[in-house]
Image 1 (cartoon, rainbow, N blue to C red):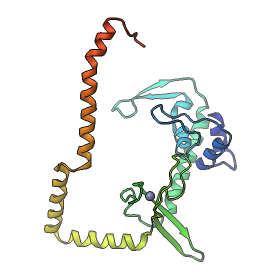
Image 2: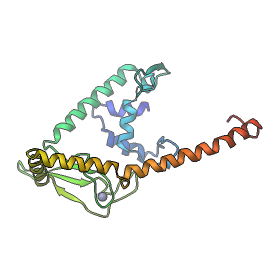
Image 3: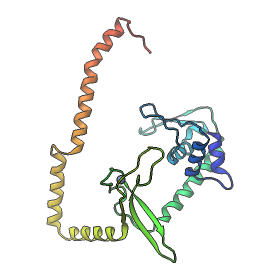
Image 4: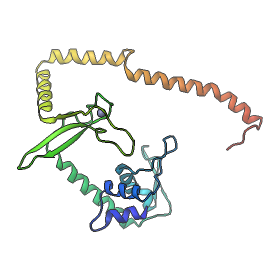
Amino acid sequence: MKEIYGLYLDIDGLGTTAIASYLTNKGIPTRRPKPRPRHDSWHNSMVGKILSNSVYRGKFIHGRRSPDPIPVTVPPIVSNDVWEAAECKRKARRKHRLVAYDHPFLLQGLARCSGCGSVMARRRNSGGANKVYHYYRCSTARYDKVYRRKCQQHAIFPAAPIDADLWKWVKTLLNEPSRLRMEFQEYRSSLQSDDNPVRGKLAKKRKLISSTERGLPQLVYLFKKEKISET
Ligand SMILES: [Zn+2]
């Protein structure tokens, strides 16, 4: 963990992607939550999560998403200064990365690949003298080392005409309040209809809850009979 901070803060510091491949090449195992299969490849997001986790400077935040989180002091792995320096660098780099996209990708986070369902990632290519091209591209179009999948559909679309068309459509829609209302009502009823995919997921979760609840008395019974221990 200390080494990750060191690599990141080095004068010719590596980025999270470079650190991820460095750790993978060294054969350092990742720490993944149990339900998922163990990966031996590091992903840049894992490195980013380590760098941003305040537990490494000795501050564990209990209930981070709750209205009043409780800070707990734990033995630090890196000094507060090192941690703050990494955080500073992370923020600066992120800002830099956002500036790199000088095209407003309207479908960012909305469009998905029809082949594999992955999000369509933003891509920027410079084609020589002052020419820059923007694309939407399936995020697993290239082989994804971490999740070991590759999209067969080579989905790549130029962003400029798509976003221009989309914006034109949005503008006409905004100029027709009656149509906008109609589309909104259609959307609302689609949310209530039974074929909404979210409803399917909800039904599955409910089923899981009820089957867990059914198993509970059995568990309590076994526990009382001391057939199973507290562990
Ligand atoms: Zn795809």
